[in-house]
Image (cartoon, rainbow, N blue to C red; front, side, top):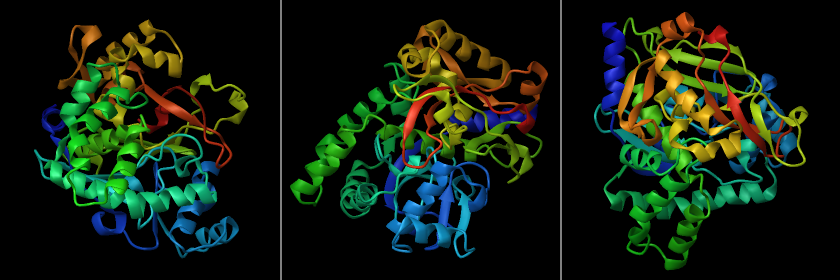
Length: 397
């Protein structure tokens, strides 16, 4: 009990702040020129799902280590590339979660405890690397993010003195976001706070306006920051001897993995599940890949699916009813150590969202954490084909 209380208090008291941006190889400890990070628990290239293999190939082409997808495929399977889960280097990435050396990363500091986390830049919707697309336009966008977007944003963030992500998340929850699949309000709030700085930094106006437009045109921009904030929060609760609080939930499209505070760096895995929800027009359940991505770090921290009561509109995207959203948020209290004092749910009379998932309570109640998530097509590059609700396999617990 004392160990879990300590873990919960560290989650509750965390203060994630976006402090910088930089290339992965420059800011992520342990990153090298031939390291490729991916979402979920460890997995060999040969076992990766279609979207993740496509993203790996795209990353290798982006880095200039291969010229074609076929050449990248051979290199990825040669043993000359080091594959690691994002989580093992303090990172998080949505869907395939693929990160390579020169990709720009958000740097988030937990001001309360001093630890750092990192997340890549959300590319927007459509044909994007995180869904396995690796065509020339996808690579060109990644080059822009590195060569054009990063220099501007690095100066903007540094000029801001740090962006309080916990405060923005709390405000977003009061404005209809749950900060996993709905980030309309938080992205708008972020842009409002940073807007003057785009016109003050020492960068050409055209470059600053293009970077500003990239954020403005992507309602999911805040997602990756939300993930990094949750990662920085939960890493501070890791490594507490005797604690059964979950600090990671992540999926690679083949396996679902969790990590537990008192169990060190060990992964506990089970088969990735199929997501149940709404398919986009023209697609069916036969098209979907199994559950994929590091974005379940949001639910692990108590937002996303755990906070759907704050975001009734989310059911139009993931399926179900408004009462389902309320019920999910209420039910999650039964498997958690406590409630957040910052992430409040207005439709539930401003009760805090449940946080600090306890393995023992999951097993005692047979209630699995709820995750709302996008659905990727099983083939690389097709993109998102729906959204819905999924749960971890009981085997993890």
